[in-house]
Length: 305
Image (cartoon, rainbow, N blue to C red; front, side):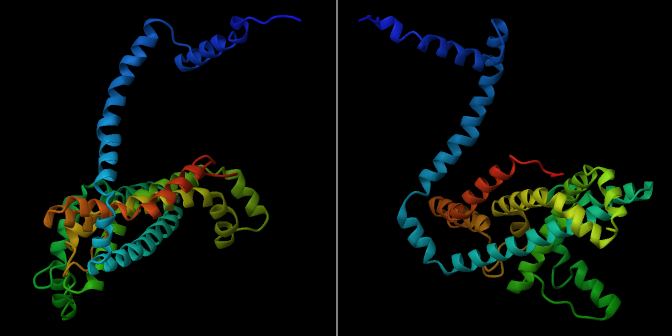
């Protein structure tokens, strides 16, 4: 009967640790590894200080069940949830579908098309704050640019855009779409340009031209990218408060709030930061599945050939 020593039993653990260490070092040795750690530490510190700590602190602030009982009993919260669903359902789909169509328009050759594309992306390039504030004053019911134009050109008394709930919410949606559609158009344009010309040539031989080429060739190849962009746009919108804050201010009578702007209102205007965090965190049951789906979709290629 052979005997096995304790050292022989524990022997393989040391090579495993060494191989793990070599894997973490990534082929770096000596001073190279030390410099890599030195450059990595500040980024880790910034990530912990400005991402992990605020997120953990926010979750702790909104962890009391009584906050959600108070939040759900607020009638403004119900209208805010409806506004958020409408904003996501209408604004996200309109701007993505419009971006998909316009990306095909900007695929046309010519220097004038490039110049037109440059003008088209200007709304996205300029800062959001002056953009939305300008739109707010343009929609002023008494002496705003829009109503003055309607009266002077067509002799029509324009509506009070920001004093009626659905007009104000629609104005905020329009402002959001106008601001962000160029961004998604450029991404979809890059996706179209990634499709080889040989695919279109083969489709032309088979008789797929015009609308048929779009339905049977272009859109199927961009479907995965389109879905990823839709998920990203939805996630961005759930955390966006600029378009509502600076166009409608949540009015009239707090009827156009989104979850993000309601959280700002509760935290700062009502001086209840925990309730504001709870309002924002109430979107997590929708946000977390969206992030999980997005992470899974990002594992696949953006343009599937």
